[in-house]
Image 1 (tube, rainbow, N blue to C red):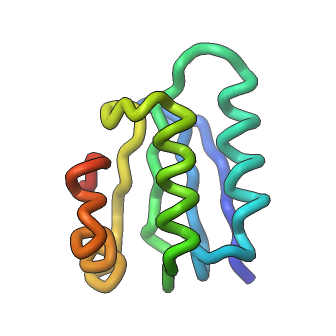
Image 2: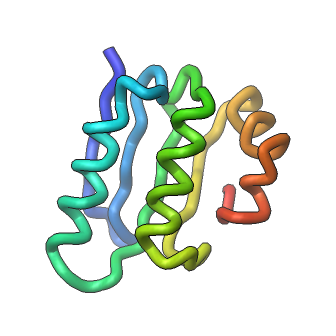
Length: 102
């Protein structure tokens, strides 16, 4: 079962996507970042995809919504630990121009 786990790391809020990143994760993903934003301040979000097995177009949309929510500041959201398939999806979708991908 897919999940979003939230951790406060030294560099910001870490959203760990475990399993399939698709529409079924929409509510959990939104709740995770809204909860962090409600704490105040301007946190940096690190989206950790080390355990992400799959992502679809709705996941891309969720990432764009987070980006818009943060004011399109690419320094405030970083995508890390993508497997080769997910990295290819992000690159083909030109997300490497909108997000920092490490």
